[in-house]
Length: 91
Image (cartoon, rainbow, N blue to C red):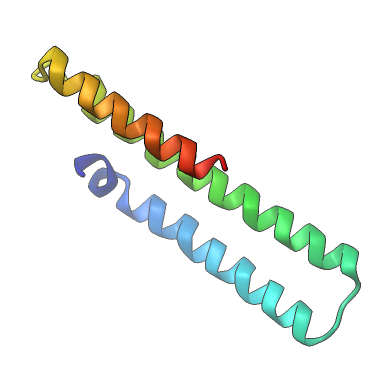
């Protein structure tokens, strides 16, 4: 998990932004704002989560699959785990 520790501050900033967006969505629903504004907020949250996922995934791939210390078997196992994760995320 070293890649998440190196970028911890940046990742936490992204997560806090997502929390703020989710809070704004909740407030919009409570205030019964127009559907288009709610849909735009949902799209913004989805984009933010996708950006977070991409950043953590890139760090994971570079740190784990790019590590020279790994054997071919370890690389394959990591690649298989990433493939399973991506399939579940993209459903």
